[in-house]
Structure formats: structure tokens, C-alpha cells
Length: 390
Image (cartoon, rainbow, N blue to C red; front, side, top):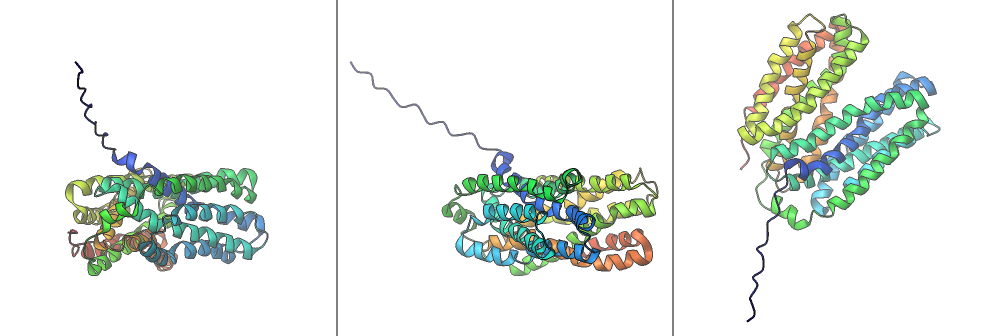
């Protein structure tokens, strides 16, 4: 008598953790923003080896900044209209190639164009990457914080890697940084092909855009990025000129501030999953005021080190949350939202630097920090009008 064998019940695969879902996106974001961090660290070598003037050197930095910031809105619009998942891996390759060729280029014009190409590659990466990373993150702010923190890590690694490489081999060694971008672009291309149009539609297929909320959000991000740009620019000088520290300790303060920013980005995602997106943004903006005041009141160069770490941490608590919140406010245009929150709004903070420079010329780096301590008040007022997305 035949025995009927029943098929074994299918075992559902174990759900993947937030890091498992986002590790490719976080690594790709780190590699992409590595090239943003490499440019300011490389510019002084053009002055030393090519005898460029300071104004010519600042023009090189401007080329990379313009290339990375201005096109992001257009790239986001195109990504929303056409999909174009290949833009992110191609952008990685262009960012690497442009930067790598800059040190080998023979004339100022060709160097400028190479850095502009590198910046354009950075711009091509962010909008579609932010859109597709959100598809895999789902509704998890923690998952999106891994993606956002990847960019902070890459920007932090830029100066760390550039200095020893260029000190050893000179400007021609920029070519050393081409392979990481090409390799990561290939990995990301294979990975992004798995995200289908159906999967994107599941995340972004419904909802009503809320442009007023999105405009308020951009105001909050511009204020936050103004503080971030200002602290990054003046923290070492604050330690050296105001606290009387060595240049090495000033560099340590900058490293602590950047490291705190990475931790704050990750922490902000976890807080948002528990308290909500808007409350997390409001919390980060509010905590930034006493953190900056405490730093200003501290007169000891060593006791102030944990305070600058705290400033970096609370400054970046809203970072990943703002990216996710922007896409929730524009559910039908996720690429545009990512392009604005990751590109234009962050770069807009740099426009405030000439004002801070004038203040620092007349009142020293501590005067710049006094102004920076007042800016979060604007962010607090704007974020108080934000509403949780539906």
C-alpha cells in the first residue's frame, strides 16, 4: 500500500535586519561622499605643487561644489519621471574618474573640468540612490539612518586618506582613488537592478504631496546645514585662536565633531522609530542650543573636547530623519525630495559662510560661534510648524 507523502511546509525566510537591507546603500553612499571629502583636502596640494593662487584654488573647490549641488534637482526630476536606476552607479564612476584625473590634468582648465565632472557624478548619485534606498528601508527611520550615516563616514574619510597618499606620491596619486568608485558602481548596478518598478510603486504609489510642509522642512535643513558648515569651518580655529590649543588639538576637535555627527545620524533614526519623525527633528534642533552655549562657556581646551563631540552629535540627529520626512511630504516625487534634502538644502548652508567669515574677521572664531548658537532658534521655530506625515 502506497504511503502518501505530504510536502514539507515552506519555511519563511527570516526577516533581514535594517543593516542587512541597507549595507550596500550605506557603503555606496560612503564611497560617493568620499569624493566630496577628498576635494577640499586636495586643493592645498594644487597650491603647493602647481603654484596656483589662493583664488584659483578656491575656484577648484567651487567647481566641485557647483557640480554636486546645482544639478541635483534636475536629476531628481528625471529619476521620478523615468526611473533611471543606472544614474547612481554611473554617478559613482564619474565621481571617481573625475577626481582621479584631476591630479593628472596638465592645465588649470582641464583640472577645473575634471572636478566639475566629479561633482556632477556626486549629483547623479544622490536622488535615485535616496529614492531606491528608501524602497529597501521601508518605513524604518533606523534603516535610513544607515544610508545617511554612510555619507558622513565617506566625507570624514576623505581628508584622512588624502593627506598620507598625496604626501607620499604627490598630486598624481589622485588616480589611486579611481578603482573604489568603479568597483562600488558595478556592485550597486547589480544590486539596484533587483529593485523593480513594482517595488517602487508599492512605497510611492499613493499619497498626496504637501509642498508647504516640504518648504518648511527645507528651511529647517538650511538652518541646520548652516550650523554644520560653520562648525566644520571654524572649529579648529576656535581651538587654536580662542582656546590657545595646538593645531594638532584643533584637528582632534574637528575629528571629534565629525565622529559625533556619524553617531548622531544613527541615533536619530532609532529615536525617530520610537518618538516620531517630527519630534526627533524638534528634539535635535532644541538640544543644539544648549550644546553650543555650553561650548562657548567652556574655557578649557581639553574639557571642551567632549562638548564639541556633543555638538556634532545633536547637530546630526535630524539628518536621516529629514531625508525620510522629505520623501513622506512628496510621496509622488521621491527622487526630487532626495535631491533637494541631500543636495541643494545641505549645500545652501555653505552660502552663509561669507557672513560668518566677516564676523570672524572682526570678532574672532568665538564671534562666529556666537552667531552659530543663535541659528538653531530659527530651526526650532520652523520645525514647530511641521506635522507628522500621513
